[in-house]
Length: 291
Ligand code: NAD
Image 1 (spheres, protein in one colour):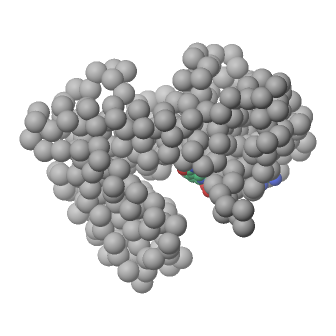
Image 2 (tube, rainbow, N blue to C red):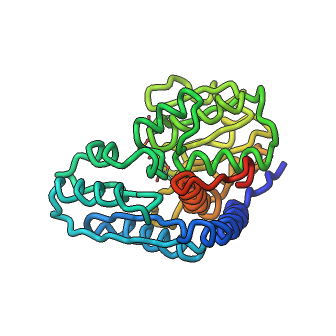
């Protein structure tokens, strides 16, 4: 059996085009374009690449991009003062502070300062609480992108067994919450899980967010499973995921590649979340299911 490759790049391109259409409709109604502010502190090369591509994608979707680049020795109070200004700025619908922040800055103090209504990354505890209790709010971009790929592939996920490998606040936990909301039976595996293959053997859906190259082996998977690989690991042979891709292709029914799977979805969902924030902030209704 050879699995199908889930083309996250193509799906993300479609989502970005749809965001662009809706942003074009929003702008004359609101008298301004949706706006996303991205804050980068320091010179981390990977973060600089992410911030550049987020800015470019934002402009391509017909939205305003406000980019703030601060030196690595920026004081925490100065960063918080910038967040406060962006919270008060009516042209800014979404605020994203690129992680990781330099060590002298308390990330939680900064993330919790962002207004939950502008928290398009969905990292604020208020939005995490809304997700956990089933209230509308912002959901972290990467797991929401994974859910979109799964629903596109499988339709209704009700009753399926899902294993999420990893329990970070950014990926694993919100992914498990989304799958629970979609009526899956969810297992969260993590670094202290005993006998991971035993859990994976029954999983119709596997989401791997571990940060270890090729960690999930093909022989651990159930025949026909759908495998979503969130991992982005830089190795000597280039970018690789958390799943042994060649092995998984022999057993699964569909697998996301790295690169070109989950990665492109993250920015597309960020734009989608910003569009939703803009409608809420401007009091302009967005039809349910429009995006
Ligand atoms: P993290 O380091 O915060 O969390 C890793 C998780 O893996 C932890 O919860 C840990 O318990 C679990 N883990 C570690 N060793 C394990 C083991 N032996 N068995 C089972 N679980 C184990 O990482 P993260 O932020 O969740 O990111 C995970 C991966 O996803 C990384 O490769 C990261 O680069 C990637 N990522 C990609 C995107 C994207 O846009 N595609 C976004 C965020 C993260």
